[in-house]
Amino acid sequence: MLETRNPEIIDRIPDRIVNRLEFLNERMLPAVLTPVAGESLQSLLTGHRESLSAIQRSYGAILLRGFDLSTPEDFRAAADLWFQSGVRDYVGGVSPRGQVMSGVYESTRFPAHLRIPQHNEMSYLPDPPRELAFFCEIEPQHGGETPLADSRTIYDLVPAEIRAVLEEGGISYHRYLNGRRMTLNHRNRHRIAQLHTSWMAAFSTDDPKTVEKACAESGSTVQWDKEEGAKINNILAAFRRHPDTGEMLWFNQIATFLSSPRSTGLLRWLLYQSAFPDPLMRPFHATLGDGRRITIPQLNEIHRAIDGATVRFRWQRGDLLLVDNFLVTHGRMPYRGNRRILVSIH
Image (cartoon, rainbow, N blue to C red; front, side, top):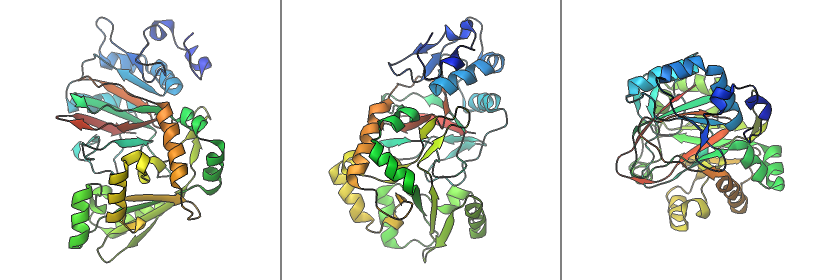
């Protein structure tokens, strides 16, 4: 029997599928399937859906490698097959990204020389995506790996005293989305940081009332400033239970909403603090739910736990990675040269 946190789930999968599983590292993340003779991606996704879902619930992510997948159109068709109830629009997200076609997006336009910390996608919203699908259209040659980490392992590794603080207070998320009347000073900081996006892009609208309605529906508040920028705030629990298995999970975006000298390097951290002295004007910021600061020592322990749970794999062209967004965090390593990873969310 394969090692897993949920052996009872794996026990129900036919041997002809279980025996095909391969792993790229000792953490068994992701589980890997390659095609047998004559097998198409469509036949695998439709004919073995129950088994694939069970593997995903147990290991958190499945890498389908070597199948007939080469274009964004192929990827959209595969995402439709896997998600069944349809792909979800990336509305309300903080990361700048381009839309390739309906339901298919660039993974991010975050500067290539920076690492994207581990995160569960859109975990700053009460209704985050349940699943993610990634497709490697252009294989990165220099860096650009997508690190993965098991949310259960992160939860276990974060010191109990820090978990207690986060559980008591929850996380208050602050997002600042650019408006149409940015001052020259703000525009220059935005150009240097390359982290901001506008509320028009994030919510796919030019109507402030549409943003206010979307925020109200998600339990968020929005304030407008003189630059017509949107300050959005909401409070959520730092941990959630898995919708299917009930397992307790690390499920927040502290690591992406807050920086520290350990996570970004001292010089870059100092420059960021200097460029945005008001935390509520930063692209993203977080505090405890009652407004108390999350300290640098606490952040260091959190990053240490995340790093201890994180593994990397190198993309190959045509790879399809199916991720349970609750069970697995993802990030991105810095890279040089070409790289094009597409994503659909559900």
